Length: 207
Length: 99
Image (cartoon, rainbow over all chains, first blue to last red; front, top):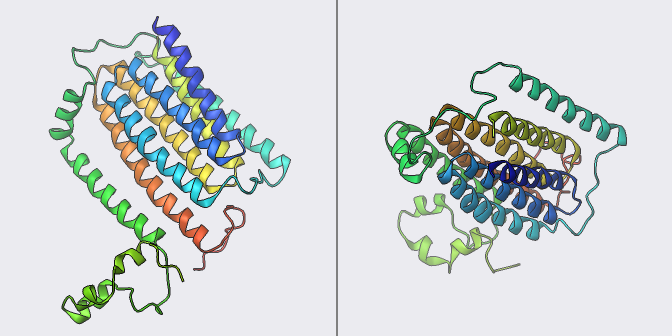
């Protein structure tokens, strides 16, 4: 029975990956990647990684892909057709490179003679891969990695806001910055303009 | 199912992602292909974790997911900034590093 589910999941994974690469419209590319990620979560379940499968569905399919869809809708990727590679020869070279990479990876992985390959794998204990076990590991052995990951997420969020904010010039007097707050030393700058942070975030006032 | 099958699927997805990065010119789709490659790595990590009966590979895959989310946030911010500057959304056209 596991074989049937594996092949179903693998077909979904590969079809989603191929769709992501070959579809013209970026919107459909994102939807193909959603199919790929859901099938991958099924494979994770077959590998006894329950928590990882749930995180994959919630974080990737639920959050990251929705972010992609919003950006595709904002940028309007479907409006102009995507020009694919500059020349057909480049496209053929890319496909050839991908095929060579697959052959090389297969040789590297399957030719190593690892004892674990080729069998069902060693045994697993009760509760392998459940949220309780993963959480215990994250808060004991891998606490440092956990904390570093949280700091990294914070840095990425701040960086994304700074990168994507609307850069208006200095003409708008209602725009406030950290420097203004420091210079005035009080809260007049904050109360002087109405809803200055809305402008920073690319809010309603359009000029 | 033996672990080899999962590793072959992982290698296939990685190759498809690498080929997609070379073929496509839209930075959004290039980011999607990067996700494909990261997920192929995750699948291999989880397969090895299952083969060894050790959960630490799953922790590694979880951290990879966190890093991928950070990469997506910054990459999408860059794409929105490119769009705001009225530049073409095409990596062949974006060759200059001036602001």
